[in-house]
Image (cartoon, rainbow, N blue to C red; front, side):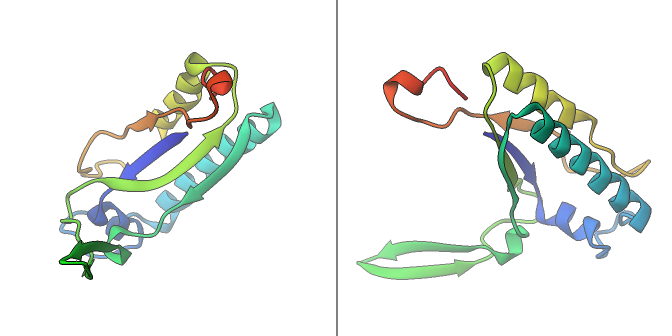
Length: 138
């Protein structure tokens, strides 16, 4: 599983909300979508694509805890600058090195010239647990 991260501020920039830094233009968004579409299509063509999903903005999150046995719900528990899981792609590939190659291509994801990002763009790779005989598979 290749996991991508983002902050509420970055979600806001993508949809043109004022964050105190330049919002992404429609052309910037089109370049991002084109890049991600091509990345996914190449995985489909190689037979390594399994599934991909993007997650809604952190502001739409609810955290549920139990306090004295009763559920306590908190809306939007994430500070704006905290990175949270923004989406994932599941790949079925030869090994961890191949998964690293696939993920590394995301480091070249386009963003607007002069954009102020909360962090360097990165992704995590994490194998999905399975039966013992499948542990070496990604």
